[in-house]
Amino acid sequence: MEHVLPQNPRIDSRWAALFDEDERAEWTHRLGNLVLLNRSKNSAAQNYDFAVKKAKYFTGRGGVVPFALTSQVLQHAEWVPAVLSARQKQLVELLADEWDL
Image (tube, rainbow, N blue to C red):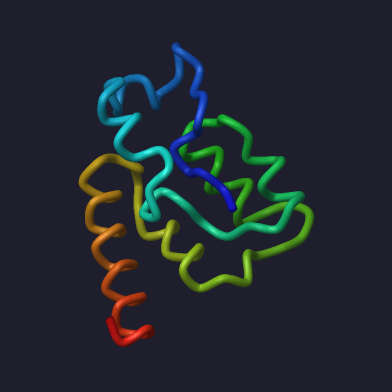
């Protein structure tokens, strides 16, 4: 399980510019920020900015990520609170439908 918005972003990273401390606290561990990755891709992604993370997710050793929900990350130029909010809503709706909630 990979946190797209890193748990511990560097202070000089793009993440710090896109998410204030409260937003980071709100979104870091929410479903909308999580993607499935194999262990090697998860390790490679680290705390990089979003563009680098996308490249690590979908290129290099191990090939393309086989998870459809992870592949949705490619649709986004930036990983910002509005994207996380929409993704959170979509995933919760999918789970509610699947589990008849």
